[in-house]
Amino acid sequence: MIDRAHPLPLTRQSGILEISRSGLYYEAIPVSGRDLEMMRIIDELHMAHPFMGSRSLRDQLRGRGFIKLGRGHVSTLMKKMGIEALYKKPNLSKACPEHKVYPYLLRGLAITRANHVWATDITYLPMAKGFCYLTAVMDWATRKVLAWRLSNTLDASFCVDALEEAIARYGVPEIFNTDQGSQFTSEAFTDVLLRNKIKISMDGKGRWRDNVFVERLWKSVKYEEVYLKAYGSIAEAKRELGKYFEFYNQRRRHQGLDSRTPDAVYRAMLQVPVAA
Image 1 (cartoon, rainbow, N blue to C red):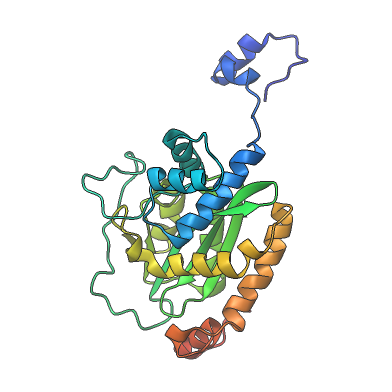
Image 2 (cartoon, rainbow, N blue to C red; image 1 turned 60 degrees about the vertical axis):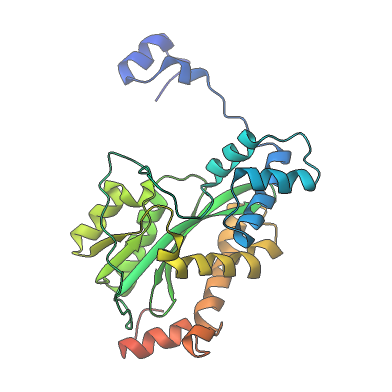
């Protein structure tokens, strides 16, 4: 939008476009190698010990050689990764106050059929020289991953893309469950659900157990795939994760599904062929 070669001054151009003039001179600073290494360790610790907050993580990192490290820096990295300690908290603030939050609909509900309840979430993925974010849409009863997307930012668009793909391929569920993250409370996301007449359910903030099956998926993805590799790019991550999710759906047998695969259980519950 801004043309630095145009005879119109930059001040005037920014005024016409109603953007901050200071933003014209901002240059993004890449995340340092030290911070990327700390973020990788924080991610592993968070998956193994999700109750750890910034103080505990700081102490763990100091024990691994990051001596001059303060709690504030760890807290900043956690925010950049989109994670927080998982425990019951009083007086919870909303992730985005201007967005509508919907009630939790799954309490006491028996979920025993495919396309009854779908769920989604976002997780941080470390790479060799950077990081990205992964979102996935899962069928609650069968654990089948219906769609997924990668992004290098935490905006809502890649979550909306995954949702729309899942609906296009598998129809609509009765209920869709998320947490109260700003991506899922955004109008762009909830409008897709409302337009398709899907009931919206949202966890109480900090109640990670309300979406426990997606949390278990993240643990499987990271320990069985991501931590074993160092993706060189998002393109490589997309290719390798595609192979993993095919394995997860079609060949990985789950004890919670009587040692059957998510695909097999999903097909059996629907009793009709579904999209490949």
